[in-house]
Length: 184
Image (cartoon, rainbow, N blue to C red; front, side):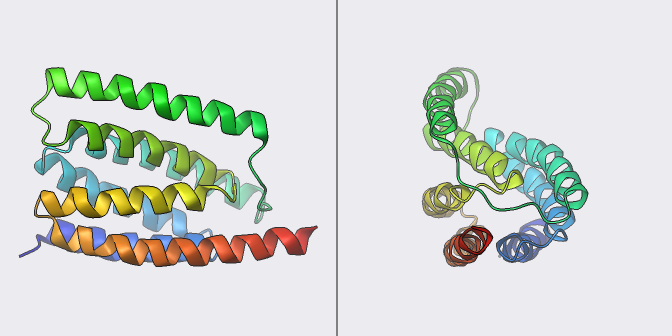
């Protein structure tokens, strides 16, 4: 049976991603609440990097909320080629480094998956705050990985949310693509 924290994480997670896909500023406070619930849930499940990731999401959520409010609906853009290279390098190097640290110095239940999904999620969140269209492909990739990861930790409700996230991400990608084309 899912815990109250997992149920609240499910509800706030689904709501926030739906709002992000619709480019609504209200996504940010709901996303921050989601991160608070999942910080607790993942810590209890010994997914330490996933738990710590939620703290970073809270900070990025505050920043994204500020940017989206300040810029009054900033435009969707594409990631520049040089930025793609830098972000890909960050994913490879940081994932390898966190994996080594977590495997050696913690009792993490899934150090490789915890480290790689954490880093890709951070990059995707950064891209989301800047309304970079490619963020949706990264979210889809981590949502697929999270499905297995959370199921292996008996977080079945959270695992069941991942296909919902994939569907919302596909909608977000489609809607953001339309907004990008309309702006041209």
